[in-house]
Image (cartoon, rainbow, N blue to C red):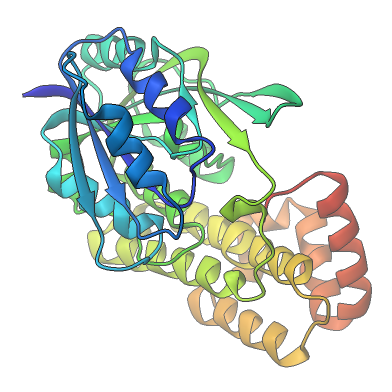
Amino acid sequence: MKKISIIIPVYNSKDFIINCLISVLSQTLEDIEAIIVDNCGTDESIEMAREYLKDYSGPVSFKFASTESNSGPGTARNLGISLAEGEYVCFLDSDDTLESDYCRKLYESAKEFDTDLTYCNLRSVVYNWSSEICKNLPIQDGYFDYKTKTFFLTHFISYFTTYIYRREFLEEKGISFPSTRSSEDSCFLAGALLAATRISAVAEPLYNYIIRENSLTCTKDETRYRDKLNSFRSLLEFARKTGYYALYKPELDYLFIKKGYLITVFNYFVNNDRYSKKDLKDTYDVLNQEVPDYKKNPYLKDNSMMRYLIYLINRHPRIASRVITRYARRKRMKL
């Protein structure tokens, strides 16, 4: 069995794919594989990858696979999981890179503490410009108890590529990516956090997230908000089916209010030059369908800013649109 399977969905990344592959070849952990999934882009990324690797005979094993059509990164990652042979799996976007010790340090920590999940920190890089360190939440290595899990769910950070996931754990718990095209990664990680019983961390930035102007998260998309909303609906569906909702209802409801609803509306305002009252009402209706008692949520009661934003969106959408778009641009939020 391989130690780690690195799953790389590839879509229109011809300017970055070689650096991505070089970072995989530089890994200091032995017995790893990389699964490159062609997600049916329109450039020569896959051809470049095949050409670069055609004479490679080193210790990293490579597999190529392809989705039937461009169906979003979640579908490509699910295909990669189905082909993986590693004890753990991780995910590398084709325009990002790994530090050479990413696999070794995370795998060693995972084995030391016998974990379902192990994570590191992230370096966010504005291409050819600047970088900053983005930290995951701190944790005591080992048992992932109820109190710690509730804190994770209510202070959610979606650096899902900084994690390695025990493959048998994902299969046993039925954790996969939604087929949506936005926030599918956040919901995958949230599902894994719900189900995990043991977790550990490496407090180093070992994953390099490259921000490029035309990446999916930075490209304007007037309908992405719908996928974002549906992703979080699928998370609640998973939690209800598996019994986790009963255990973590306040936390999951708060996560839906915050990311499923508010961040969806943020996304809508940022990506649409004109808003529709019907779109906003439909989105609010989903909040009421999924979390009908959301006003009683204890975490929301303690967050006056979130309560004010919900009020503003529904009573004064014009003001909300201006406030939210300015805030998102100032904070450089990638919605």
